[in-house]
Picture (cartoon, rainbow, N blue to C red):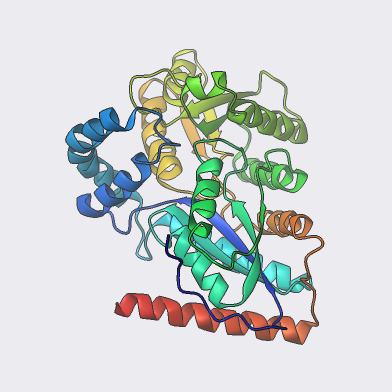
Length: 368
């Protein structure tokens, strides 16, 4: 087995701490070709689709990719911005703001972001941090609730990368933060702000991304963690059990997934005479296709067509100041014991140096 080329080791050099904010990913463009590349990588992950590889290869390449790529490209085009993918933009901004928040707290920590599928990929970001002298890495998935289909897949990619690295860094992983008080308070505050401006709904619907029911039966804690997030947030908001619902969206294929499903539930509420629903997606920390198109567009249309009077979508946390501070506190707790403190001038200089290195790396990649 060969090893990746690495920067020369220098005795006595100061080891830096790197933090990787890792999200799911996004196509590079809202086109069938780009979406096909992205979907192939995503749906080829055995953590995502637990079907025998030989069978799934024919289904994926012969049925799903030829038809779903064009359909999904149309959906991505409906939410694409002049700056690109919303998920990528929000994740990049979160990483930059997290860096600033940690600097303000006196930490000499390098923060970067990566995508499990698409670009910038996890291996490329880890290599970049290594060239910047980061010998301690904290992996922070953008998934508050743990699932083998998401968080564990990021961990797989992390460990797979370091199989090929001779001088591997010290690693720490954030498994979940579904019940972290800072995260819960940031969610609750976003709801309070929305209600202060628009009034309260008849029902608050908390829609989480679905996974096959089989994963729950095999021991995946995701379902329980989603419900705990919802319960803690309801307590912060002073809601009774009749005031809110937990649902699951984005079902794929014919197998049974976690229920109740979001879209049928919203239609049922409308037909039962519920006039206004507010829908939020606590499991997504950045707005993306599943929130902006599937919920804010499709679910809205379905609810109103079924007789509902008003549909409000409450955005994800994105760059919310409370969320950035919650992430900073989360990182602070997980890097405890690592040498991260420095005088303010040194911290600022280190951040400027890292930012310059990152821009040069991106420019070189674009040139290639």
